[in-house]
Image 1 (tube, rainbow, N blue to C red):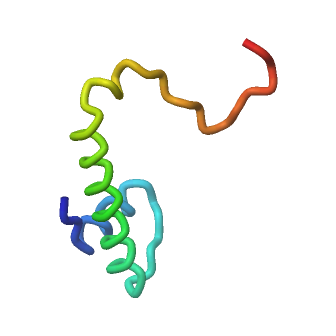
Image 2: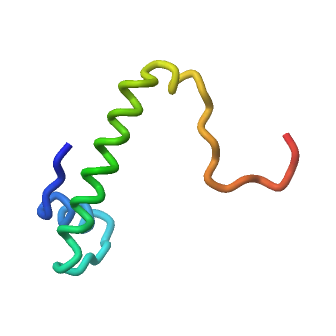
Length: 64
């Protein structure tokens, strides 16, 4: 998926994120690369991803 500077500008605006004009191209390139890799993972793993619970970004201290 190819993300343009305009897409990044619009996405940033929706969450009141200020990205300097000079950084928009770098953000667009990195986001495009990340989304392309995520598509590859989805193609490789497919339905397997739906059968696994995601790991929380913050690990709780208490035992389950």
